[in-house]
Structures are given as structure tokens and as C-alpha cells.
Image 1 (cartoon, one colour):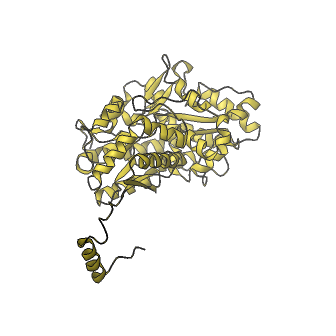
Image 2 (cartoon, rainbow, N blue to C red):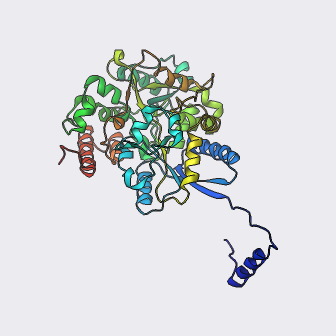
Image 3 (cartoon, rainbow, N blue to C red):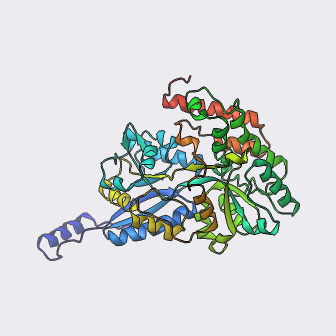
Length: 430
């Protein structure tokens, strides 16, 4: 608890200063509050960023606050923005979820800041509204797919699958060996969505134009056979008995441990989890590989790509100048190097001049392979459409737990999406 001087003491201190008896008071350091998710890879990166930034800017201390992930974290961010109680800087999604922040009203316009010259143009498009840019990239571009344990694959003589049928054949072999084939961590509901969201490359390959028609309210998950498959595959792995026994109570951190130590074979996840394993299970990082979520056609095998999240400054911050200095550091080669040191190399940065080390973990090398010439990839739907319902993670938990049928889950999500589109005021929705 801070002890403040009483009035008599304050008058005395002022008198001493006026008489020059105490000298000029030193300039107090500014504390910059930064709100981030609590993932180990995020905390590792931000601890390194805070240390390196404060070393270069000794008058500014960075105080890291954490929030939950998923819908709980979404609600916290929106509530704190609405009440003017947001931290000086905060981390949040780019793409469709960013569109729901009402950037023009709540966020500082960063379009003309010199550090934007360092940011890759493709990223600027996913943190922009009405032609104005409001964020800088934090962490790296990601892939959605399946992280797998390479030791289990080697022991059972398996190969990374390029079709769903091959994936299920591998799952059967792993289950027969007495090992949980698919790790799910439904206590953290956000982690349940990958079979749907990471399937978008396959949806787009089978149903070209789905994103445009979906945005125009002319295509639905429940009525598009290609889009419905993500929900159906959630049910398939549950019904086949491929999940870890504690799938309902396990958390994201449990999933990282199970995958790294070979307690399970496959973890459907975004590749940012590579950083979490690098931080928490460094000795096992070379035992983990990655492949894109397989679809029906091996010739169309490819990756669903996520842009990194953004860092934003709320208009309510009393430290906007200091916050801009921090974002300028993040959007620099020194900022990338700090993140790599804190959380390990995870994928391609969206800051010019930031390269990956010559040697990277196997899962990162697998991910980078999907960005090479000739490889196939598609942006995730949330970067092609402003429409994303907030309740998908609860629905996918229900479908993935056998509580709700896939067709019912898809229809419920279509209704969730309709409400979001109405809130955004999109044409063609009612």
C-alpha cells in the first residue's frame, strides 16, 4: 500500500523544494500496462519484449497483465474498452474479431506512424477499418492443423497424412497401440474449434466462392456439404474413441504436455502452440511435428493460414506517446529478436527484415514448407469475411463431446453468425 504525505508534510516538502534544499525531484518512470492472453508462448515473448524495451527506454516500465482466452477473454476486452478501463496497450485478434471492436471510436489511429513502414502490407489489411490502420503485428503468422508426436509416428511407422481417410487410418493404429490418438482440451473451450476453422482450405478447395456467398448470407455451414464436414469430423473422432479420457476437463496446458511427452499423438491446434512447448517443454520440442488438416483430396492438400494478432492502443490510455514507442519497438527487427528469444521461433514474422534462425524446430520447418512456392494455402475464413459468430467454441465442444449432432451444431452456428452479421449492419442479413 502506498503512503501519501499529509497536508503538513506536503507543504513542508514544497517549501524545501522552493528553497532548493532538496534539489529537483527526479522524473518518475512511466508504467505502461499491457494486456495479453495467458498462454506460455505469449508470456515468454512479452517478458523478453518488456526487458529489451525498458533497457532501451529506461524511463518506461512495462507491466504485463493477463486475461483468459476464448469468449471469456473477448468479453473482458470489449467490456474494458466500453468502460474506458482498458490497459495502455492490448493484444487482440486481427480480422473479423477486430471488426467488432469499433476501432474508429475506441482505438488510436496508427496509419501515419513511421513504424508502419516496417509492417507487411497484408497484415495492415486485417487491422484496418475505413482505410485507417489501428494495429501492429505481434508474434508470427500461423497455420491451423494438427501437431503430432514424431516419436509415436516413428515407433508405429506412420507417415503424416494428406487425406482425412489416411488420418483416420493413423488414428486407428495409434489407438490399437494403447495411445490416445487425438488430444482434446475442452476445459479451454476455444481449443475445440480447430476441426472446423482449420478445415477452411479444404472447404474453399471444394466450394470455391464460399466466403463471398457466406458474407452475403447466401451460403451456410449447415447446407454446404463441404463446410459441414468440419462438424462431422469432430463427431467422428469422438465416436471412434480416439480422444484422451479427460478431454472434457483437460486444459490447453495439459494438451501441450500430453503432446510433447507422447501421452497422446495428435493435437488439433494453431501453430502458436509450438512456442508454448518451446517455453514449457523445451527438451521435447524436437519430438513435435505439424501437418495441415487433411481433406478428401490429396492433390488439394494445403494449409489454412492465420495472421498474427495485433497490438492496439485504446483512446482512453493516458500514456499514448509511450505506448506508440512500445509498438514501434515491437514492429522492429529488435522486437522480433526479443520474441524469438522469449518464445522460440514459431513461423514467419509480418515485420520486414525479420528472418527465422537458420535452425528451427521440426514443427516450424513443417509449417514454413506450406509457404514455399508450389505449396497450397488459403487464409482462414475470418480474414476473408467480417462474419464470425462468438459461440462457435461452445458449439464445437457439444458436437465434439457427442452432446449435439453435427447438423444441429452447424445450424446453431449459422444462427449465431446471423446475429453477429446483424450487429455489424451487413447488407443482405435480417
